[in-house]
Amino acid sequence: MSTLTLFFLASLLLLSMGLAGLVTRRTLVGMLISVELMLNGAGLSIVAAAKCTPASEVHGQLSALFVMGLAAAEATLILAMIMVVQRRFGKVATSEISTIQANKSH
Amino acid sequence: MEQLINPILDTLLAAIFSPLAYLEDLISAYLPGQQIAALAAFALYVLVILGGGTAAVMSRNLVRAMLGLVLTFLGVAGMYMLLASPFLAFMQLLIYVGAVCVLIFFAIMLTKNTAEGEEARLPSPVVGLYGLLAAVVPLGVLAPLVIIHADKLPQVTYGATDTRLLGEGLITFDVVPFELISIILLVAMAGAVFLAWRRRPEAGNDQ
Image (cartoon, rainbow over all chains, first blue to last red; front, side, top):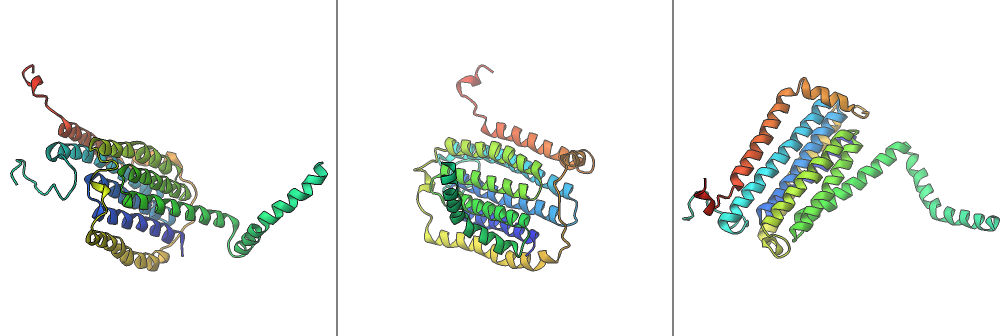
């Protein structure tokens, strides 16, 4: 088993843990944590693919850096959304937030 | 005195370390020493990722889940070091552990979702089953594919990346994504401020 396979399996581990969390978590914050797990797995697999094969390693590492930047932007926006949802619904449990309308009539 | 103690110490040390040395000899018959160290570090990081990720996904207390996430980030940073990408490892610590985790902590605290929040109850068995399926199905599909196909790719042995090359890449061939990501960060920040803006009712008359 090659080095590349080992690193790919590690990032697959992160992906599957994040998916399990995304399904089982009850609140938006818990789902945010799971999404961060999956994004980490994506970055790891990109870097492993760039370093272990003849592909350009600089390209791969910069792509992983962009994934990190996107994750930071996404976490910022989700924090704001969680605040808005908390203010409007009083809780962030996903089962309670089933409306997409602006007014409160369900 | 020393002449008395030294042989005893030697015997003790030998008794403690000789099984380890035997094991090391056994392994190094198959693998060179550096590779053993790399494999051991890899196994350690996988354990850290597994433990941290399990805590992040399963813990009923969201603060503990966030600490598990920090542990996972540290494990992935170690993986980046193993991949000879030290700059990425430091960025991982700086961005994820330094910024994203603080944001998540803010989210936990602003929603008062600590020990006795919505997450305190276990998910229902059906949801737990779905979660298990969501974890196992992609793993069962992708892992065999990875094991079959990744070995066929041409592989290289790598050295540490020069950080200067990364900087040069950012201002030459990756300049458009670099500028785009700064715009995205700016838009995300402005959007977050706009969304979280709370207009005070009594301040409305003054403006």
